[in-house]
Image (cartoon, rainbow, N blue to C red; front, top):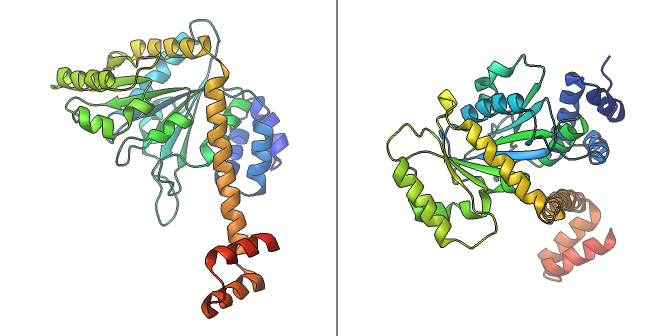
Length: 320
């Protein structure tokens, strides 16, 4: 029987129970005391290596991710540095503004792996979060790490401009574009220089590949100089062309960041995660303060002109 206790569920997930893992992920999506208990346990485990895949709608991210799963399972390691025989995929889907439910289209397109015991695919709703990543995603990644997944692919929705927030949750970020996609000025506006570790021109069997590569190269030349220069790869995800080379690029980037100061990215990610948790808790605190006699008293004082919002807020915070 599957427990409702986060501690027991974590142990069951470590032993391979996908039902327990799914319930833990539901906890972190739903919020509340069970989310806090689950996160507290999950953060004690090693974090998985996270590969983020983002790009505009229609770029072929889901097909690319689907093909990457095959290559990852075939190779089974980061060049022998760390072996793994399973991979997890988080598909962050757009939410309904009415129900909060996700479209789940990405998971539908990966049905070929639905019965593969070495693959775990989960769709998560953005819950209206504008950056495309829900606050639950960092916790979900930790839960997957606690369930012994050493590698997680995170595919984000491409709503509006490029999803720059994926970089805060990923160790390696892949930005997928198509031939004929925008010029260098549009690329700079999209903030790709700050996000991409690897560029992929997918659907490279179409016209416009040369122009797209030129635009990306110019963008990189005009950008700030970094130790790592994002490679620009060409793929045709529908027939797996270039997917092996893409995984090689991921392995090379991992070796690069592991070869430098190892805590730099981890520290940056933990800062982002802590900031998000602080924001949630502060909003919750504000919600609690915005009720009761003390709050209504300050409203009356504002109406009477005997105080101002800054003084009222200071007094409310002091009254807590």
